[in-house]
Every structure is written in structure tokens, then in C-alpha cells.
Amino acid sequence: MNNPKTGRMKSVVLNAVMAAGITALLAALGSFAYLGTFTRYLADDYCETVMANSGSLINALIVRYQNVSDRYSNLLFDALSEFLFPRQIQIMPVVMIVLWTAALIWLVREIKLFSGLQWPFAVDVFLGASLSFFSILEAPNRFQTIYWRSAMATHFAPLVYLTALSALALLQIRKTEERRLPIWMGLLFMVLAFVGGGFSEPPDAILIVSSALILAAIVIFYKGPRRQSAIFITAWTLAGGLLALLVMALAPGNALRLGTPTPGFVTLVSRTLLYVIQFIWDVFIVLPAPSLLSVALPFLLFYYLFQDQPVRQKPLVVMLVTPVLMYILIAASFAPSVYGQSFPEERARFAGQLILIASLMVEGACLGAALSQIKVRWQSAPGYLALGLLAVASAFYPLRAAGNAVRDSLPHYSKWASKWDARQSQIFAEKAQGKQDIVIPQLYGIEHIKELDTSGDYWINRCAAEFYGVRSISAPATGNP
Image (cartoon, rainbow, N blue to C red):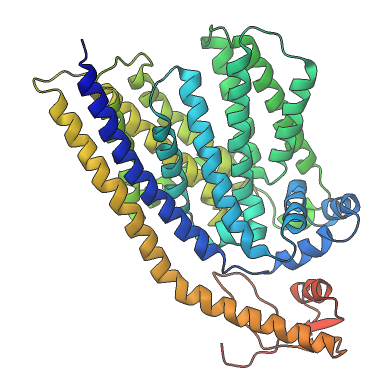
């Protein structure tokens, strides 16, 4: 029989460790958000802002779909951004990092409740914030993926959206049980999935493949009281993802965007499977410390959590299934890029990075839970040792990693943002004087994103001229960055 006094003491110690870890994680995420405030309008941002503010969003969507891109939800995201924060694009990284962290915490909590697991809410916050921190820390080209709004709308925003949608689906399934759901509920999830899938092909591929796998698993293995509602919501969600894929596949603008001939089916599959292996290997070689900690932190936490309670969820089975699911989902996220342009660009690998990190965390948690069931003579000693190591690692590493990121990026970002602001002030000043053909100093590009060109006829320059309401903008090279 457990000693109530010992149980209370363990709860107090756990809460203290969680408080320290959460504080460090949130501080690190705050540092990443602060770096995002130095972003500005770049390249596609000008064009998309002009289209979003054209007066008829529906017409802009149709024109864009027919001539430029099949990704219809991007422009909706940009329009919402401009509606909420007009001409304040630097606010978006802060907002999205907050929403990302909140969505992950919500999803962790829903998974816990759906699975019948028990631990304090602080553990939900710690796990969700950890996944948010590691995904942003390890994001390939953080500026392009998290801070540049055009790429954010394609590769980061859909993951935030689909994470929240997954949590909402679990909530609805968990509360429904055997009650028959109305048809409007299925249509709602189909529409929500259709919107989420329309951001870009990689997240839609993940949505389709994960929904299909979950639906198959429910039909074959799950016999619980929520079976009917789980099948209903998952099937409608899958339908929304498939509809989004169909709409994107039929877009007339695809011929312009793809440009090069696409590979055959066999080549597509073989390259995708090979690229996934290369990607995972590269992550482990380039980012060994965060990869190891993605396993170690959940391992230490769950070893401590389950020492005094039985584990009924078969963690060893989950450990065997997780790598297979990870490989399939990363391959799904890579396949659209392989189909269009060979190995995925840095920002297109973000979804795969997230899947890898989440899988490592699941492996660590399951291993910790499984080993916690092995009884030793002084059972509390290894538990407190694990908690002590967790306290040190979770409080130290996020602050160190975020501090290094700020130290490495802040001087460059702040200098670039100051020059961008000065250039914009010049444009406004000359426009106020009645000038319509603006000549400004050329600003060096940031993180490999194309800047305004020397020619006013370049596509970015034309969009920038519309953005500022002048006839033309050119940026001849000055030789002085």
C-alpha cells in the first residue's frame, strides 16, 4: 500500500521539477519568438499581401489557383494575418509560436485522456512545450520555416492547424462514445480537413496517410465504446484530405510551378524511401544532442511517473510500431517534393523533422514506462535519480540552446531589419513627395530569400510597387551591403 505522505512528497517534487522545466522551455520559446520579430515583407509576401487586400478575396483565390499555385489556404492565411495585424508581419511568428505550443499541449492532454493515462496537467504542458521547443530548435532553416510568412503559410501554419484539428477530433470522439453523430458533424470535419490540406501538399499527404492508417487500425483492432464515433470522424477527415488533394492536383497553375518533368512511380517511391533514410541519418549526425534529449527527457519523466502505478497500455508494442509509422509519415511528407523537385528543400523538411522528434519522444516515454515496472530493492532511489537528471537537463539545455540561437542570429537579423525599415521609410518619403518611380539601395538577402532586384520589371519589384502604391521600384547594386 502506498504511503499517502510519500505520495504527497513525490507530487510536490514532481511539480517543482515540472515548474523549472516549463519555465526554461517557455523562456526558450520566447527567445525564438523574439527573433521572429525581426522578420519583414520578403519576396512572395508582397504579392500575396496585394492579392489578399485586392478587395475580392474570392477572385484573388481563383486567379491565383488558375495561374500561380494550387495551395488555396495560403492566401486565406495571409488575408487573416493582414486583417488582424495590417502591415505588421513581424507579429505573426510570435502568434504562431504561441498557438503552436498551445495546440501541442492540448493534443498531449487529449491523447492522455483518450488513452486513460493519469498524470498532472503540468506534465501535459511540459511535453507539449518540449515538442514545440525541439521542433523549432531543429527546424531546417528556422528563418524561412518559422519567420518568413510565405513559407510559414506553406510549412508551419498547416502543422499548427492540423495539430489543433487532431486535438479537436480526439475531444469529440472522447465525449461521444456510442452516441450516433449527426451528419453535419462529419461535414464540419471534412471542411476543416479540406482547409488544412489546402496549405500545401506535404501536410495534406500526412493528413491523408495518417487518417487512413488510423481508420484501418480502428476498424481492425479497436472494439471500445468510442469505436463508432472514431470511425465516423476519421472517415470524414480522410474525405476532406482527399478532396483537398484532388483540388490541388487539378490546379491549372501546376504546369507553371512544376516546370521539370516528374519522375515515374517506381522512381518516385525508391527516391522517397531513400531520402527518408538520408534525412534521418543527417539529423542524427548534425543534431546529436537534441535528438538524444528528445528521447532522454520523456524517458526520465515516464520512468518516474509510472513507478507507483501499473502500465496497461503495452508500451513495448508502441515502441515497435512507432518507427514504422514514423518512416511512413515522413515518406508521405517527402513524396510531394520528390515528385516536384527531388530532395525536399529545407523548409519542406520541417514536417518530417516534427514527426521524427515526436517519434523519439514516444520511444523515450514508452521505454521509461516499461523499465519503471522492473522492481528493485530501493525502488525510490532510481526514480529520484531520474527526476534529478530530468530537472538538470530540462532547466539547462533549452536556455543554453536558445541563448546560442539568439547570440548567433540577433546581430545579423537586427542589422538587416534596421536597413529594411530605413528603406521603407525612404519609399514612403519619396511617395509623399509625389515620386512614382522609386530607386532605393539594394539590400542583401537574408537566409537565401530573394530580395528586390535591380530591375523594376522583376516580379518581386512589381509586387512591391503595388504593395507601396507606386509605379515602379528598383534597387540598383551599390556595392555596400
